[in-house]
Structures are given as C-alpha cells and as structure tokens.
Image 1: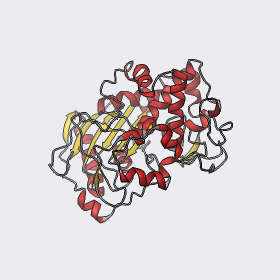
Image 2 (image 1 turned 90 degrees about the horizontal axis):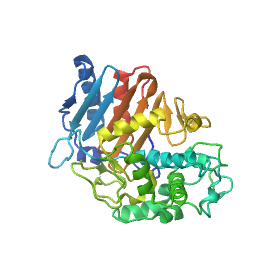
Image 3 (image 1 turned 120 degrees about the vertical axis):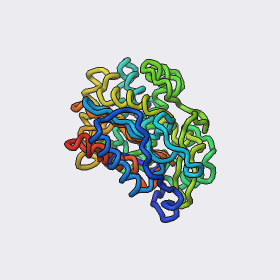
Image 4 (image 1 turned 45 degrees about the vertical axis):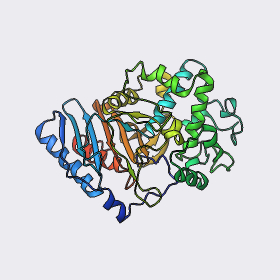
Length: 373
C-alpha cells in the first residue's frame, strides 16, 4: 500500500467497458536517456508487461541511480489520435501537491511562526475537536476527521459538474459537520480534509495565498520552472489525455477543474521537475535538522512495510509520495540509502493504483532489496 486516492470515496472498479475503452498500445519505448542494455531491456519488459496486464494507455518512467539512468515514454498520450506518450509532457500530479503544502507549512514552523503540536483551533475556527487536533495530526493523517471527497453529497456535486469551481471553505463544509471517526492521534486514516486545513494555516501564517507562498519559497528557489499551481482547468502543452471511470462511465478528465483538490492535488509538473523534487523531499534538504528528525518520529503504520510521516511516506525505504487524481497517477520517491530516485506518470487511474504497479515493477529490477509497494 503506497498510493492513496485523491477521492477515496469514489468507486474505481475497472469494468470490461473501461478496459475496452482504454486501449493499451504496444509499448514503443522511446529512450531519452541511456541505461545499461541488459537492465534497460529488463525494465522495458517489466513496464510493458504491467501496462499490457492493466491496459494502461501511456506511461513515463524515470529512474536515476549511481549506475543506472533510465528514462522512457511508453504507449499513447491520446487513445483517439494514437499520439505517443512523451517524456517531456506535463501531467497532473495529484497528491504530490500535499508534499508542497506541508513543506510550505514546515518552512513557516522553521521560521518560528507555528509549532507542529499547535491545535488547529489556533488558526481555523469551527473544526470539531479543534482544541485537540494538532497540525502534526493533520500532516500525519491522524486527525480522525472525515475526508470531504468521500462524502456522497460532494461526490454527486463533483461528478455532476467537473468544471465547477470549489473554494476551500466549500470543501470543508462537506466534512466538518461530521463526527470524528476516532480520537486524534490514535489511528492512521488518509484524509484530504486535513490538507485543506493546513493550506489555510499556511495562508494565515504567511499572509499570502498558498499558491504565491509555494512559488516564492519552494518553486523559485529550486528552479522548478515547469511546476505550476493552476486556478483553472488550463493545462500546459504538451500533455496527455487523462482517462477515468469514476461513475461507471469512461470519461476523459483532462480539462476537469482541479479546484476540488486545492492544497491536496491541484498541481501540474514534469518528469525533470519531479526528479528534483523527489531528491529534495526524500533527503529532507529543505528542512531544519529538528524537523527532519520529526518527520517520522510519531508516524503510524499504513501497512507492513510503510508508514506515513509529516507530509511524506516511507515504504520499504522509498521516501516521498504518490498521487491519484481522476485520469492521472504519479509516484515521486527517493531511496536515500541507495542514492536513487524514481518518478512514474500514467494517464489513467483505472484500475486503482496503476502507478504503484509500474513503480513496483521497476524497483523489482533496479532495487530488489527495496521494492516499492
């Protein structure tokens, strides 16, 4: 278990109609960087098999290690035109957005403007048990709050009009009138309501919009020039089409309004930018030593080999995050002990966690002692 739905309440069963609609094109792997021939061939075969088995239209895979550099684009970006996937395409990165939101919060904590153990009631009013739920609980998915995108009323509103613009306050309105699922700090439960609240905390502490603060303090310093925080469905070119089946009907999601995900999942990026981000995120380079030490100190297990820390997970040594948003999945992780980085983009979320399946196949070849799952 290493990737989570941006909309965990939505049904994502892959039906025969979807498999027929999302047709896999034989993986014509277009090499854009060298790898040792035997390893490259093994990786091509491993990725191609997963794509064929799961009917993934297109994928981009990048792995960088001390002895191997492997970058490939597989399959198609558009099932109608059969345009090939390209390694330089932009993609919607889903919950990788959380890592930017929470890193922004941590920079403010490093500035002395807040503390991880501050209650959310100090910054946002009317949160149930707001005097008990801390910023740490929110960042580590231990708040007990209901995730707004699992609420039927939200699902109905979103699917009825995917072009609709949601405000953060509207998103919270679907969840904050619900009772807690468990006492804060006692369980792990992935919840997008948490990160909406943390986005509002960043805005309150900084006096800036979340987008402006992230640009100024993360994107610009790291020269992530192809990473953006859209306020509309606009999508830079070139980009693939995204394919989903949230309501049982195959849909193209490319121009859906990302405002529904805001601080959870509205960002767009590229392979090269996400390579840099994976390295910075997994090393903790942007954080003080104190906050690096805090990242996983109070983490609770997600599965046998994985735990969720402060805005990042550790699954079998791979540190980073994954993202699932309708039509797109991403995996962006680093393995510090092996000086290795992995980025995976796919242009479907059918069946669920296809990005993770690709990442598992790749790491099974290049880091067999640390397989990403």
